[in-house]
Length: 221
Length: 290
Image (cartoon, rainbow over all chains, first blue to last red):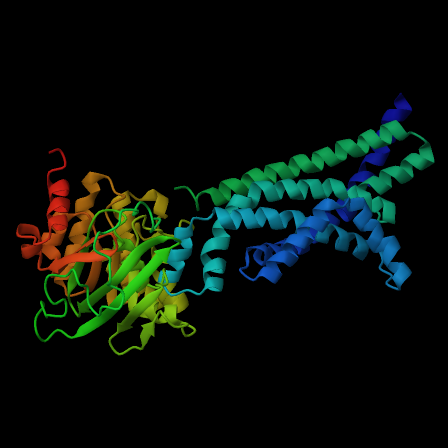
């Protein structure tokens, strides 16, 4: 068992580093881009324009109705067949962003709808346009409402990035796979990977709590 | 909040009124000047109609407001008072009728509205809501300067100076950095009034400004509104506070079932109403236990 403990310790930092240099940047970049997509899709869905709202609905339906792994493979292994070759990292970011965009769009839409109608009217009565009211009055309040579900989405995303190991992105899980392939100690290394994912997610959860407390003072009624 | 709340009761007298230039139920000529003769008209609304689905909330409302005048709308809930007020601020779009402010274009709601029509209305009037609708993520000061600074492009320093002076006047100078949830209901509503005043509108609109308040907080808000009236602000007030109407109003309109049943000086309406419906309403309000 001594060698097992030693293997655990020796592989710990390489796997953590895989997380810090692969998993976290991948998740962060995808989440930020995904939020931009999500806001656009949410506004499209809320739009009075039927075409826009149908496009938004279609997008959410496709993203939620197909497996993330399939989306990832279509982009990385499928697109080259039609002449579009994308490197592993950009492929992964594209797939995860589009995926987050679909799920977060529903969260943002619900958060916008949760802001009382009187807030829109108060914006209008001081002379604001729809767009200004949305930006200055509604979105800041919707942001607070959406922190818990969006944090959930982000934590799911951190774990889902392990799928990127299948398209050759070096991240947390890929590092542990490589070590496991070399040492043949699958149980130990995959449990170790699980433990490190869990530690990352614990840190993110506490970040979520802090953010909620910070934003709370703005909405207490 | 819902403008169509419970107004399913219909006036027995809606027949044959649509194109009438003035309300056929009004006992006296609504255009007869009641304020000082040198007062010029500020707002003219004619034949305002509005339905929500099958529910006809307003059936040809005429309203004239002269500069410096205080018009109070009273009537049972669902009578359409709030919808009139919201129409004046462009928060509801009437199905027909016209609204014009002195020096501005006449908006004809029977026709497609020109772009920016609602902004034209909001340029001239500002609304104080029943539920104050303060922005919870902004401090008191930010709430007040948001309109002047972001919409009217007043320089920030000037907006802050003017907002501080207004807050001082309603006794909330020391609350300028508080968030709305830290204030009492009466304080919140006073900030709501200041937010409207900061826009320097020609016309202030009050939508049941004290209905959501605890009884002991009503006075502080009404006295602010009364002071503004005494200073010469032009205002249309929807309220159930008949004492306030009696003291502050130049003209009282009693509405029921989407029509103006009776209008006149508060002294006349409250002491010798000519319409049976007005009498019944006043009885119910003044002697609810009988």
